[in-house]
Image 1 (tube, rainbow, N blue to C red):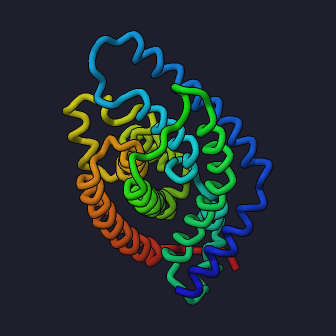
Image 2: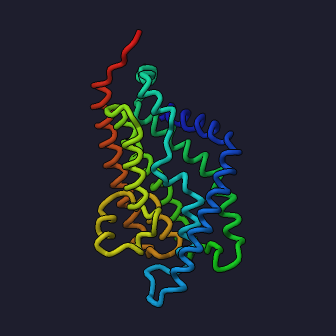
Image 3: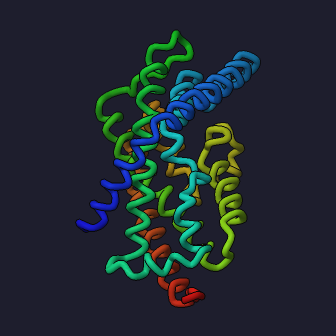
Length: 267
């Protein structure tokens, strides 16, 4: 465990150095955030039907999505790991006296946390001082905020455990393009990054709730806004823990299988 914590700390410190890239990302996410707000505002103003989620809750959903985007996006990848696999330098990683899955998992967690720290704070600060109705709302109570934080952290672990299958698949395909695109397109849609899940048809929601993707962002953000009641949120956290355990076990097993077949050429 000490080795994994050391990897996490070193990777976190390294990631915190890329402030210019982070600030550029903040500007980009503000652009996308306001674009989504304008689209949804037009939708709400033109519709006479009662919507499954209020505009205020949608505003909070969008700003949280933009603030913690690096936490939840599946297409975010570590090019260094892909290079290790495709170049054969994975041999150096295999010489380390630690579990490779846990080693990479720690690195990926730290990479996302460092990026989120640099981007989320300025976005949230500005989102809280914007004029209504574009201002992010506070959660209903402190308990809801606490549950949201737990769910967000668990969602981060679920995202990384899913993304680990992308790196594992490269051992077989030797190309990260296909698996990254598949996970990115399907994952973003079923996670609620394209449209919030309450706006989806009922039959599609049934499919979404069977998969683990919605646990990464849709559930934490709707917990924050109060759209998901407290008791349902606690059940959702239990589901997150169960899915996380399943994904990690499957990831560990898959990693062991592909490592048994790894062939590194050269002297």
